[in-house]
Image (cartoon, rainbow, N blue to C red; front, side):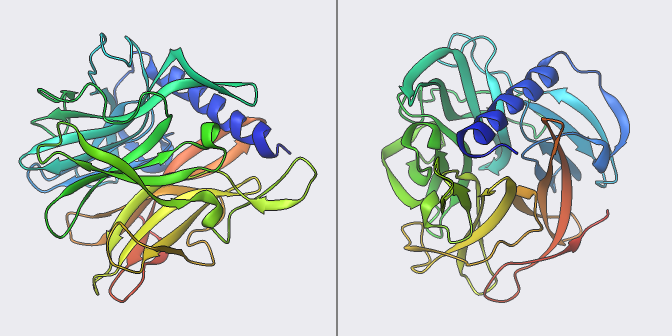
Length: 335
């Protein structure tokens, strides 16, 4: 059993390997059931305009479906600038597609493995950051935002898993993880976006740290329990009562696990209070919430298995209830 740095670095490397395999020119397949698709960090857009579902995630590819029962794909949809900091063939992780002001924005983590920004405890840190692309269509192609910032986040910090949040006043924010590989205690942070999402405004602000979680655990080098260092996959929501919450993922030793935190102020500024217990079964995580075209509220997340040293991740759907003051995950949902 891997623990500590060995386990988490293995996760990083295996994600790289899976991405590299997917990054070859894909063969588009038809009528594929959801549980036959191998995909980390699934994100599903239920698009009312086209009456279609669009699923993306790690790998920079896209799947389409009219009903979530059968999917076609994968399609190559991301077209970042090869002359940018990302380089000609960036890795793409945890992509999300958000409709905003008549366009579709592609929030993703891009990594340029040829550029190293730091070395921490003997481990080289690659250039990795959240960035946005845009399209007039939900299935792309997604290209650089016109007159957009060259970078949305600092070049000397590895950031990932960016998501969009639009506050009650209509102001957009980028919420993301500042990676544990550099700071050794991963954080979730926010930064204001320009009204047209062409860049960021001001400085990032801390929301909470990985160590704030009462449920995430790992062993130190002496075998003693301590809080886990990983923050992964933030996604924000409001309950019917208006309570602001966030689902996010970490680990309980070698078990991939998702929890939830709530803002006591009802704003991104928090303070954020972590729920005591995880909200999904063991080895499910990196969830997001969406309403099906029927109006039913669902969560998409991936299952996680370590099979002889190789990670196997598959998208799954769960029913969700937010009719009260908290998020309650229900039974698995079969389209």
